[in-house]
Length: 187
Figure 1 (tube, rainbow, N blue to C red):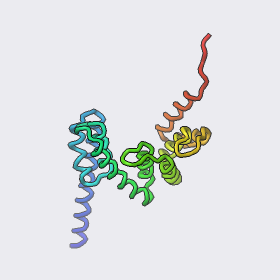
Figure 2 (cartoon, helix red, strand yellow):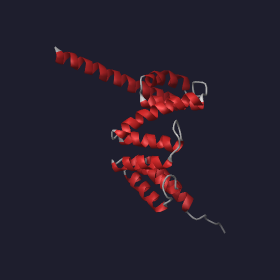
Figure 3 (cartoon, rainbow, N blue to C red):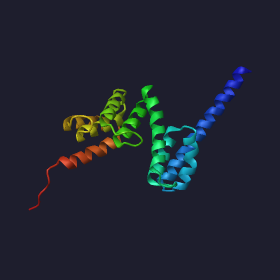
Figure 4 (cartoon, one colour):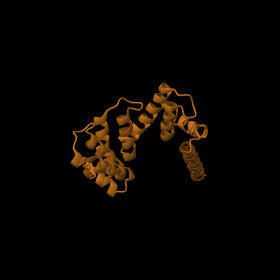
């Protein structure tokens, strides 16, 4: 009987997680369609339950006034909650969470901007094989943000990330190439 009860509880929990994932995906789809009222309606309950992605979206909604009144202090509250959850996950070894907090550190969303700390998190995520970490760290080297400016190292990391399938790295490499090519003169 105990095993059956545990199995039933586990099944219900998985169903709840699946429903949360569905609501989050639907909320993100509404956000992408600029249907902000629907996005907030779907995402806010998940954020209230501690879903870290939903918390981040709520910060975005309040930062830009998407579906809610613009309220930067409320946005900061949501961003801080998301950061705290991602930081816990990052400290537990979750590479994607490391990338998320690094992104927040480079943008200053909900936390004090700290490019050096972001670079440290990106290195850790890169050591775990995260291609997006390599892309973002490559961008920091190109810009000299939190690390010494080193175009060769930046390009190396971007190429490594692109080879691993990072669309962002491919885009960044194209922009870098356009920026570093000598201007064409016409006769």
